[in-house]
Image (cartoon, rainbow, N blue to C red):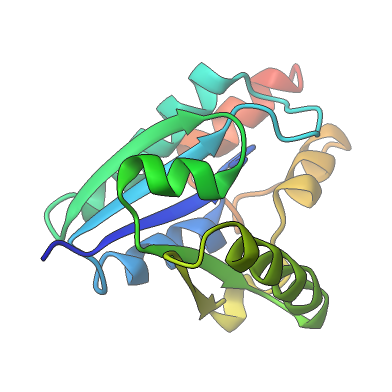
Length: 163
């Protein structure tokens, strides 16, 4: 039986914390689908095509460990999980505030689809403070995000910021 997992998110942009979670999730699953949310309720800096391309580049080093699919999706994450045959949803936790949000989200998801188990992976302590929102803000204010994202993502962020 193939263990299929879904790691959903906006990935606007993907950062080192996301990549760390992916690097550990591929050790647990036969197939990992990285679902890039089309409609996140946020104002993304990168459009969906750009976000998918950036994630594709970021996961390239892990493709030998397990099958990885990067796929945009719209609508309920539980519906998407069911559509792709995922029995596991991978989520990363950074702090207590993440736990409160993820706890509520997991409870709702279980009511929507009891066939999908949520697995939480704790963020590496080096990545506890990284959030895509903060990375974008740092770039827009002229700061250096080299510690938080890959060189490719940094360059794309700086181009978007006109720097």
